[in-house]
Figure 1 (cartoon, helix red, strand yellow):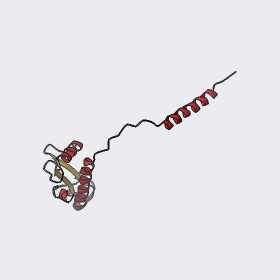
Figure 2 (cartoon, one colour):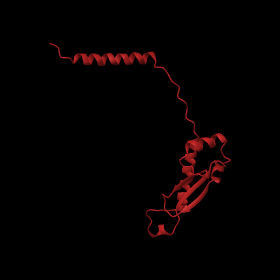
Figure 3 (cartoon, helix red, strand yellow):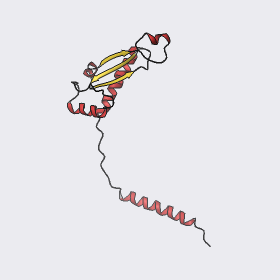
Length: 130
């Protein structure tokens, strides 16, 4: 996915939270943006999958956005943001296997009925008799 990282654009902003006076003058928060529709890394089907699964994170211009401000350094936040957006896109392109219905086996049916009989006998023995 070497080409994928070349399609990413980064924007920095001031981060909130701890950092003292440093937080007021250094832009450490990183927003990574990727335009899904113009990507050359993925085919049309994969782009459609990504757009569908990540529609809540894609803005009106068609950019997938992610903001990270965990670390106190811009370089570390950029690295985290790149890893996360790559992981999000990889997860979105995975197609889950379809589940095929299976019938219970003869042995499992017999075990279930036997367990029910044992439980029924146990309850029958609890009855008070004169």
